[in-house]
Image (cartoon, rainbow, N blue to C red):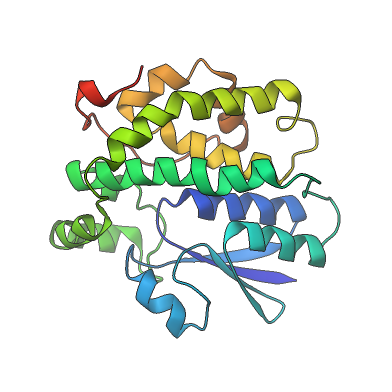
Amino acid sequence: MRAKLIGVPGSHPCLSAELMLRHKGVEFTRLDLPNMTHKAILPLMRFRGSTVPVMRIEGKRVSGTMKIARALEALVPNPPMLIADEGEEAWADSVLQDGVRQLARTAISLDKEAMGSFLHDPLLGIPANLVKPTLPAIRPVVARQMRPKPGTAEACLQALPGQLDRVDALLEQGVIGGEQPNVVDFQVAPSVRLMLNFDQLREHIDGRPAAAHARRFVPDYPGRFRAVFPDAWLPF
């Protein structure tokens, strides 16, 4: 059995899907599309919707991390990863995942070096060292498309402490962080790990159990966001 995972550079949901595939022992290849172009390309590839990650496996096309988890569980029951209560998985898939996504989109529009720092693997099969010289021309267009509405980043930053408290509570309760990882581990860890790539957030998160959990599952996450948010926006 072999899967093909399609994503965009630096995507934390795509990393969640990678963790699931590795947990199941499924061999896979990954194809990264240029950010924002995937919205037009994926429908042409006969995927439903226009967001990543998407996966092709056993003749099926699957979109989104929650659906990918269920497709993998059906095809490879052991080792299991789904849990009875989907509530925390759904929260991590939507709320936690989207909060740091909006922060990343804002930071990319403000930090000219950020986009290139996340580009390490081939893009559409083209080596990263050949793609990076084109970024000065591409970045302004992509950043403009990615930038959230005014006020979004401020709201997401204010929500961070409560979200991290919830992750710490899940660890204390044993919902995540156990010897046998589950789908919530795979959803939570990449989102928190991406937060650690923000210079202005790292020192406030690194002492938390959530940070240790993120580094356990994602020891290395290439990429960096320099200080781009006004101090008044920071909740720490």
